[in-house]
Length: 407
Ligand code: SF4
Image (cartoon, rainbow, N blue to C red; front, side):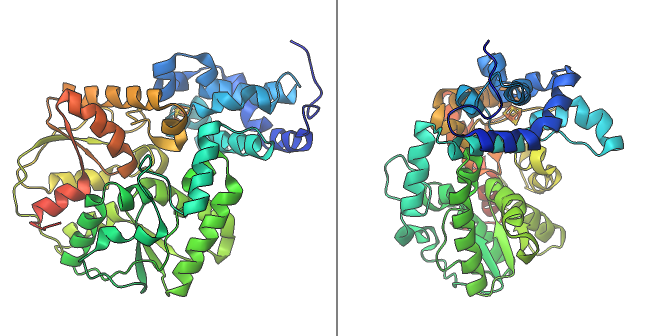
């Protein structure tokens, strides 16, 4: 292979040089480790078996870019093949063995985000992502419905008849997929919170959180959306933001603090954790039996990215009538839906296969229901559940049912 000087490729030299300077240490840590444990927990690699789609390759490319063997144009497409689930980070021996001593953690998710940002900044676009981000920019919410109108005018239609105010100290942020597609989820959340006496309002104008744009490399757009939402929170006097989707939770607890630094002073509350607390404190009672045999789908962004796996299980065990069958390896192992980080936009075939395998695993536990706490996983999982006779239900929908609440 011909050797090039770092940064000599097509006009993005300075950007690449800056990128390599930031990531070379992490890349060499991975490159010199050579264990490759991460490959077998990667949901994408499990399906494609393509070495170019592994976390190892994602790091090795940085070494090759530093040595001048590859440019961002050569590798950008490979980085589509990541759901940013975080499984490889947990499985990495550099995190597991040296992490305790050297405080080192492999950050494949951040690396993938950085490469995608470098690609966009260098003018290398993936057609599906480019179109998707243009549409989001135009409508201010994600084009989640494959052609069904998505607009600011209808962003709060899901709340019709619930009597929710606008603004207040506590505001519920409703994810775009939930606001326009699975509206039973935000309705369930709102009814549960009302039943438990939690006071909250809605935003005046809720735009997409910007997280998906950040995941696909459109960082400027992500930041503009974040600025809008934070300004809206401040305008209505919000101090506490309730979040019903794990992807939004990542945006508000990782991206927004990076954008705004110390000025970002909001309390971000995950609804699943709040509901577990309400049950513990006796403010919410579940007494209507739910006659199902269910297992739980750990959303990557809750379990592997945030270490949140106990609260949803606590809730499931509190539902009367429900037989809960848990998976054997709760942490670390990848039972992804394949829906995250734009994979379903560029490679819907892979998302479908990852979801099919996830439902198949559930089926092996002889359940009739797969419960999820991530609205983004629920569409691909439901599509696969239909043919395998497994119904996919959101955890909050089950809680509302057990609390005897009408949606
Ligand atoms: S974050 Fe998940 S999908 Fe991406 S490389 Fe790591 S294991 Fe694979």
